[in-house]
Length: 361
Image (tube, rainbow, N blue to C red):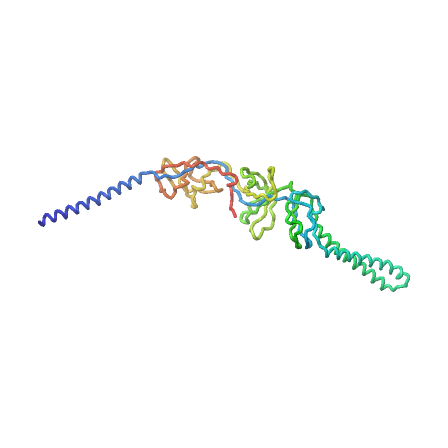
């Protein structure tokens, strides 16, 4: 009876041992199969071409010559003979600001001046004959001078009610309507030369030292979404905008498109560096430490490269990589040195001018 019980226990232990050994063997087989199975990664080839380094900036199209016209006296807009887009000559009336007080004061001052001159004409010969003392003549002359000064001042105030074009050009903007009350120094119009348009962009102070007069620029305009335009920087203002922490640069387009208008939004890449015939790897393939996974004979190898000019899509690389070698752009986290890989080939990347961008702000 006891022997029978011992045999049963022994059989149970053997079954458990065989079960554990079977599970371990199966795990080993699965591990081996998994280890032999290639890792699936996306690759793209290293290419040779031109590396372009650019500084990115944004801005607007503006008339190169333009003047903002402001109110020099308060009042109600009584006359408004011009609209946006209308051509004007220097001195043309743009608006008239009603100021009844100034008009009445001027009429009173002019009447006072006329009376003072009549008095002076009457007193001068009498003083010359000695009939009136010289003090009366001096007093009459002083009244004329005072009246002239007051009339001149009020005349200037009345002239301020007439808003006139400061230059030949076009009314680019009008910010008022008839009957509207305006304050002193309130903007009324923007007048500019509409035929001479430039692109004005704000360049970050961290990048402005690399931008020069004559630097080439690639410009895209929201109004022309499928086109790019070439131009050159011709002016960089010497003082920064404190709020933006940026400097204003002006760019003249080589061939401005028909329909270009003041106020259009522009994105610009100012070219600050170029290299011909360099190796270019996809930006996604190069890690921050300069490492890159290269596929050779179906296996992954980690290489260290030196990087140069970089844009959003490509990076200049120097090291042990060769032209047309596939490099991993997706799936690097699954790799280890010498791992077998299954390559999914991505398309070769071509940097467009608008993607050769520097720091955005």
